[in-house]
Image (tube, rainbow, N blue to C red; front, side, top):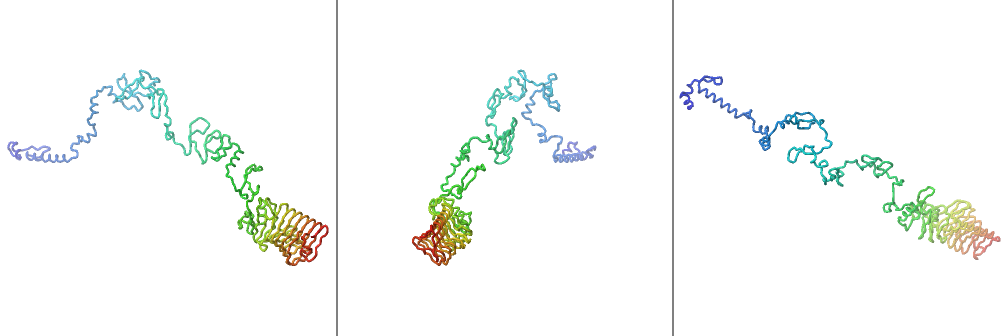
Length: 550
């Protein structure tokens, strides 16, 4: 304030009058100066505190965003010399349609031209130009005649494509197109054409397992192969691939047989032959035992039990192995070739039906077929029919031995054991059980041969005859014991019509009421010197010529 006093004519500011204005209400200079200073300080503080004290000016950030900084591009643009024609492109308005920019020489400006107004150049030639962007970095016009031939692609290997013929031929390299570049296919399909015509390919799909791709009629598709078609199969399928390697059915069968493994020990009862069934025109299998005989290589035993089954093979002495009937065992024995070996029918305890001895093959002796029980007190063979035997050997070649059994025939006129019509029967240790009052224990007729040698016969039943031979048959009991017990026979030994009874070296026990023998019509009894009482009985026998007794 001291300075102010000095400059204002050395008078105190408070003494210097000041005319008030619209902005300054003070009446002296000093107060006016202080008021202005105060206002200025407040304005300055507000100015400094403001975020943008100069809103009419751009900030640095606003300037950077609104204007391109001065750089080489702006410097280059600034150096360009423009013309009115060039600047005319800046005034072209949007035509709202496709246009091509061209120089309008008459107007001296660049103007847009509608595509429809352009003329197609079908055969461009020298003098025609094409607007291109050059490697120099600017637009240039190029004379058509200077462009590379063939659309601008030169000949040569372009990678997966080779260009030749001055650009006219483009050849895709082999294996250049991968599966992924072709197209996607349907599941389980191949690409092809199923129709019998030229056209686009399509997916040919397999609908079911086991189908193959084949032509069927006029279409191609997946399905079954028609093996009946001559076109379906050609050539021959080798044996190694499951075929026969042959071209005819006969050769194929032969090849299949040769391919089979040889069975060096065939099971006649279980194995089969393959045969052609002419009546059915088909192939079938035939059990070997029905066609050929099994040839034994050792003795064999068939078992018979009350708990057996005739569907078994008879080879085991068990319920699951043995036969049920003696007759079935004999019938099975008749199907084999004994080959000189012995076949035994082993009969268990119990009562069984009669047995008819079959004609066999390969049986050397009568003893080679044996019916053997578990003992006379345990095994019984039983029958009930007139003029039939419990054990009957009938027919030329029927030969067997029976032992360790009891024989019973409850019919009035039944027989216990018989050999007839050329049959041979050897009786071992047996019990001759029940027969009827007109029945016969041992009988041989019509060329039969019944022998009981070196054995024991136990008789437990009365009968019309103990021994009977007729019609040129032979019945021999020699070296044996006959245990009669207390028996009654009409005639102990009866020989007629050429029948011969051999009765020598026989030991009779028990009491027998009977005529000892009767020999008629060339029938005879030979005791080999045993005398008239050699045959058991209590009444003398008779021989009416030409019957005989010796």
